[in-house]
Length: 440
Image (tube, rainbow, N blue to C red; front, side, top):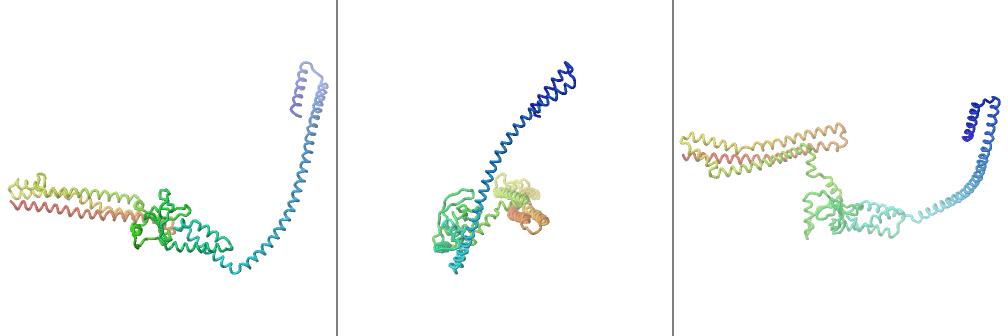
């Protein structure tokens, strides 16, 4: 029963109830009326359902025809593919036979030349591996492609042998010459520009007396940010500025030694390895040196004061003290007081310099102890299999010791000089006092 029939039934039922309220109908008549109404509904539903079933049936029959057409088409296509597969299998078997015959014929024709071709491929691979990061990459840009071709083909022709021969000869010739070339240079800040490069055989390349690293992937030479020692750079400069035979430093490992300078720590990085103790030692050294310079200026003033005989000088004060008293004992006491006061001023600060010189190595020893503690902690956690885990503590231990000695040595020298200078000034004052007393 659909929704429409339900509404009809509900309406009839409501009317029957309304009529029953107005006039009571016998039960038999009510039952007959309901049966008749239900019968009408069933007839209407039958007509609707029959028409809907007829539409679905027609649609299903039309789809069956269409599916049969598709099935027949698929069967025809399958039959064609089976035939095509049989043809391809026959062709494959024939080609296998032909290929086997051709390979056998090739082996017969090649004969002893197979070993020659193998050696050619081997030498091409060796030259490629040795020249991939060579300093001559910009002079022979097509060499790598040529060697790749020679190393990949199975049978070589005359041109391949000649190309390999020329590549080896050019490599040998390049290894015995010092040549100036123009190439692209990449600076540490990332800037690229063309510049003149001096190539030393197959070993090194320089620009403006600084070493370069070849970068074939970038088609450029990279200027090393960390250069070798100044003595090595000076040898390069002297060689390039001279018209005579000169010795020049090269990298015989073709870049390996120079690459180590990229990881070499500078002075700032070395100091940073000492951590906070290292910076404290340096701060003490700077403060001690500044204080020593200040003390030197004071001693210079005191020295000038001992020479001068003006009204405010120490010599004039001693003369006034001698002239003030007639008693020799009083004169001596007065001069002793003046000398003691002046000596305390002259000697002031010397012990502070000595203190700075003594504290620096002690702090270095403290850093050494802390570094060794960190090293043993790393050994406890990671064992001794990885030296890098212990390198940090060892670096701190050695760097702080080095900084302590570097700071202590000049400060100790300054203390010695200041002490000698102070004693000399005091001795001059004492001699002047003795001279003044002897005159009375």
